[in-house]
Length: 559
Image 1: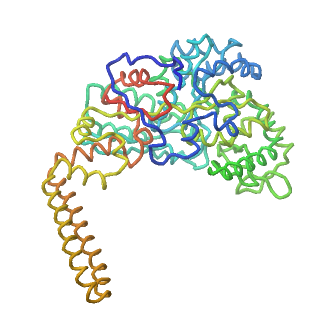
Image 2: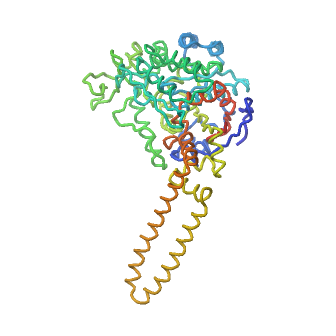
Image 3: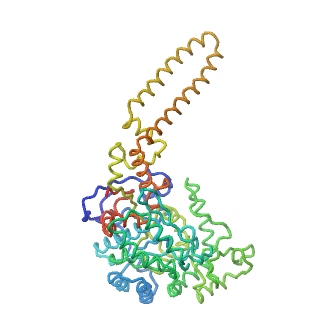
């Protein structure tokens, strides 16, 4: 791929970075990997796909010509939201720049997880920051925006944080606030004393470094009793990334909802068309060999209803065409809901298929940075844009990283491994390490023994076959059992050999915990606190300088 110029050399220190194709990583959807490899081959599903990030500048005119939200009202609201979060001068300057009718926004977003959730949330934000910088380098006025998904209502999904403890173990800290109605928007859930316990236990488990004390003080100012999830998340994100001018948007804000009212109303009136288009697109995806990304039933409705007590309740279409609150008797006519979405927009929030359109109605969005799953479902919700007569926003994959600390890099090097070898799993990798590095002599003895046994069994087979073929068949059955038992003994030996050599056992297992925790990519499990504790604030700068928007693979950074 032609380089776009949206990169710069790592300035903090000399850093080795490898890149892996997503098609070589486990658990990646076919649609996503094909999009990463050649987005223009999928324009049927992604009509605004671009071959590389430098092509985005050519879409600025189209984005601005379709933008109709009052910029001053929007920016006044954003300034108020970000001021509460202790916005930096850089963020205030970007909000002021957004008032300019020639400015576009680079968007990304994520659920408001405990301590900002898995570290890919930070990678998303930094990707948007880098893209805005690249556009400005091309003469385009651009600002980065992070959409906090405060309206989501799955508290269990966002209430945990994972770090690597002082003993190289995976540590989980969870909060269980009493204000935890399962249907309540997560961003409005108020933290209680359980947050102190969770933060305390997490920091007690971390290795104590020169950065631990200051980091703990900062974290406890954000995540404290009496603060809601949205404010805690936004404040911590601003503290880490405010110097880059990142603008934070909170969709629970009443004024943002008032600004979104026209697109809410239009979505209500066109809800049947939207559902029909989504279901048809699902069928297209399946017929082309992909899976439908989001299940859309006939009774689906693209908006949620917020009750007086703060619950977020799904609306479902009934047989007579009215809309009913899920699990309740209350019903509405479509026209009634359309009017209410204009007069009481705080009652509504978009579902996953409508949310991108709402974001891009509020902001002059030039592109959105998402994860693999988001990219996959953009193939579906591009139909919502079409139904609502909105230009489809290009979606780009956020930068994706695995951080390899020096001690783990030494372990990999010692045993002739690459990071990608870990995908084979401990059960396969540990025997290979024993055979190749720890005790090749005994491993050879097993191999020689197996060869000799097979040779002798072959001789016996020939003799028995000459006497009675059924005897040979009986031998074949017993041969399988003999070989099985030798192989089982060899595997037991290999794992026991590693256990005896405690240093090797610990190093290999520690590498798996740190680099592939719970069998998943590090970025999907570990929290940024784990890295800030080890490397300090410069960690953010190193990651930012390591971003290469021309690289569509998973990047492995050796610290």
